[in-house]
Image (cartoon, rainbow, N blue to C red; front, side, top):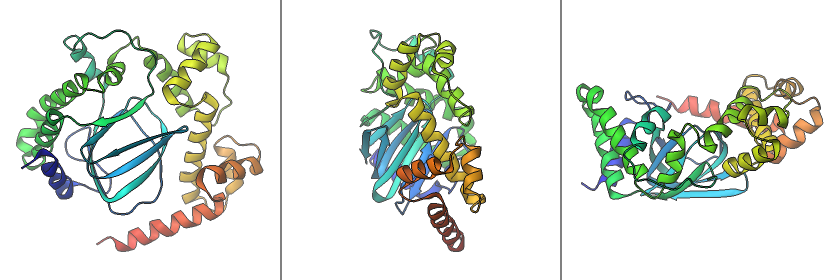
Length: 293
């Protein structure tokens, strides 16, 4: 059986609504409808086995379809649109601690300029083969504890020695520009409702304000302010599901002192004002729950 066909079969058999699997860091997704998806990613490899997806990061669009892969190197607020459904994919969390030891043996590369924290490309036959064998372990749990870490290492090696290797390398390098920008990304993610000062973030990363702003935009394709705003609005959307009647309160919780500014920026991102969008989301959640067996 072709590895891509085997991956499709495994995803159909084992995908769960929460995406998780018994193998740590291994995720499976089976999507049969296509609403826009607003999410905060993590460092991740995604291999698309069927269908396709388009991701918007800043003003840049990334598309990947069956037989292609996506690599994300840091936490990013993205907007996703499924191009074809049903969409079947496999994800693997990319851990710096697992990548760093492989860099010693990986082909040497010149230090690269700042790379955007997301890229797509064709999955090599070797990568697809390793992914198929990883998913095979879901049917052999007695083997998974021993073999899953070994196959994860192989998958990471295939990434490092493939077309996206320069991007993946940045995850494992302690002194890369990505590692410094990550300090600011994590601060914004954890303190999104607080006022943000560029000079303080620059100090956190060990850069001058101008260098920090340049490197941050090169990696995330957004300014720090745009990045913070996107996280604020995505968090507000989640909160509104449980607090539908408190639009001003939710706006204040995520850092907006002006309700009108909150409503205006929310509508610009999600296409509807907060109350209307929250009502639609609650209706979708209720409908999905009723359809569960």
